[in-house]
Amino acid sequence: MLGHICGDGTIVRCRPEKGIRTSYSNSEIELIKGFDFLMKKIFGEVESYLYNVDISSQVVKTSFTYTKPHYQISYPTIISYLILSVYDYKYNDKMEFPEFILDLDEKARCGFLRALFDDEGYVNEKHKVVRIGMKPFNFMKGVDRTLNSVGIETKGIRREKDKMYYIKIYNKKNQILYSKKINFKHPLKKKRLKKLINFIK
Image (cartoon, rainbow, N blue to C red; front, side, top):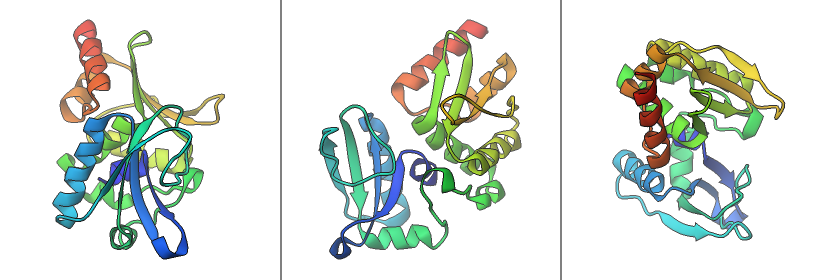
């Protein structure tokens, strides 16, 4: 759940009477359903609000811009307070890595990474690479450490022309390990990863 909040999620103060709202946006409905399942598993049968959002009229303001229609699901203020009590969420390049993730068991660490890669990751079949890109450098250092903690080696963190920081997973051994331990729930990314793994085998 927290991996998605750090990815395509947000915790934002709305109008005074609306309080602080936690929301998650994605164009893939399966990820929206998965996020809602996790929220209800953690917080119980909490009320949620699902919108099919046109790019010209986002219901909940986010810290990023979508270029195509997408789904957006949001939750009441009390959920935001509960999340903020364990993780000090900040926008964009001010986002800090939740260090307690490194103290969790491997399954939980991999779950966090899977959610994050589902939102911010990409499989480039042409260049045979799995990568993730985000703005906050310190956050990305935490992602790199978490990948290393589950046995996946990377080429480190590199800043590219778009001013984003990228982590790339190149070789066969690490990509197969990524596939086994983390993988994707995003249908298209999962399909691309399977194709890449089959090719390099």
